[in-house]
Length: 298
Image (cartoon, rainbow, N blue to C red; front, side):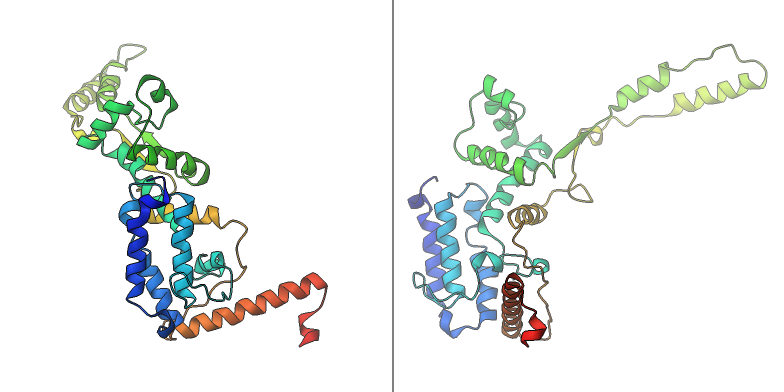
């Protein structure tokens, strides 16, 4: 899946789905809904297994862009603003469409979490038997086992990108304390500097009975656990990882405004208001560059 021709089924799905809709007869609100709900979900199966080449991402983004602006599959219409600005979240002034590249990396990133948490699953045992106990994520494994290849290579390759983008901030942390070691510490690592007498002797007997009656849990719940630092509850989700990746991608792209949302207003009206605010912002930036006061012009 390293060439454009390998992704032909995905691109054809995009084309087939778009051919059922007439972009020019749908409002901008309807197109936005289709781009988010339909077009974003079509490549999920492939994105969750393979890392899409840049040429494929560019092709699919081109299809989404042309459809949104009212053109055909290969018919480009005039764009009001740069497509990357529409991908921004609402808080940054965009329409919260999100990039396909970020979605692809987030879906591949879940395998890294599953590898560390689903240690008893069959697929994890197969991966460790081929690529080592670290599954190929650690460079030490590559010296003793076969280098990652096939679909798993896509996961490892995506992991290298995530290390510099989001996974460094979302690095899992292993927390373990063996209950048997704790039991040994409690039962054997305590003593007295001098032999107790009197009342202390009775308290010592009570304490000894309490310690001997305490039962440590040696069940599987005592196994190693992993925590994802970026999430408050420590649980991994592709949605949070996708938001983190998008935040890295969008650094320096913010429009310095927040897209206003009103659920009582038709979506197409919201988009026209967003467009007007965006143009006003562009005019203000241009006038600031020239040193002209906007209020004096008005």
